Length: 429
Image (tube, rainbow, N blue to C red; front, side):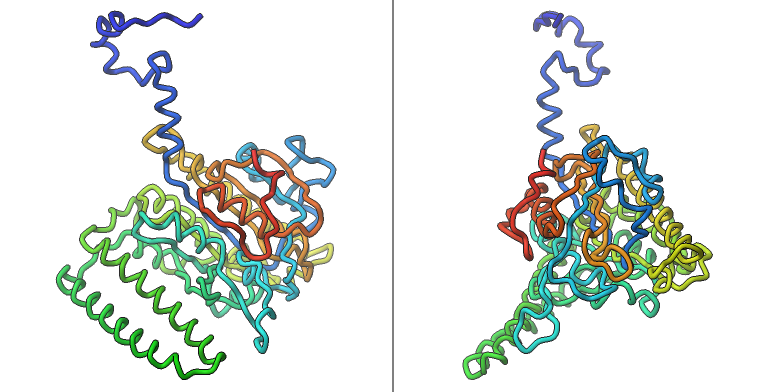
């Protein structure tokens, strides 16, 4: 029975109620739900190259919905099974390049779509999200590119990170936990007046260059105008960055919740620390969008695997397959650790960061040279989707349908993305 609580009862017990939590009986449930719904949405895109071990990573195709068993490669995620969904059947229709696990993962672009060009890309899903979710934070988005750049290119494909700007040009990423730590938490040593002067100077130079360029544009060929439009996009990106810096000039970085990382970290420990710093950045609300092109070669070496990452991806029963399976298990353990961190971090309304974060984990290729059924996991409540399931979609469902679904789920008003044909109704609650 619901107790009848009058104003007199409340006033008579007021001295005791001050120390009690907000009680549902007094109408606080609706208030708590309203506050929860208003919490910031966040997104993390975690991409890796060279795919996975097909035989031990994907759940059984016949075990759909909630009644499925996590395979060996994902067994470390058992404690988060109800907070994640595995999607099967997704692919980018234009992906034809073996071992390009990252280049078109978040864009779905056709590299040959521009006449006369052998390579073309478009904006990545993380940058679409950043245009909306990044308005209120110091950093609209942060791109990470783990590992040693000289070693970790193979398996990913062209690009400097997972991110591509509005003109389809590659965006650089921070390549170590040390660089991320300083971006998030280091104290600015330069006096405020000098920083203001430098920003004003940069803005003045951009204005002058933009004026001269527009005057030049009238007498150019179509090809030259296309190149100049790409240049204008770069100018607009710089203007946006300058405006961000001006907005946050007088606001110091938050204090670091953990010590500065060691510069020598590579592979497994590097990924773990990157994950810790992501969670810390979300707690400080320094950014709401991360993308992380994860290390491959350095990850393999840190596990004591003697097989090269490329050779491991061409596995057969024996040493190579065992190495591939070990890589899968460790990556799953690390992902489970990130979800632990996000779940443990509480919001002011008592919910967790994980409740308001959408985490995507996957690759543009399945295994060896196979580019269909891209390995894909979605976790967290940020996009308000079905969780705890193994969803098997029709073969070659556009991967960009997932990106469109997630973008709309976090409140981004996107009509389409890449080669999307619509949202994934199977994933929507």
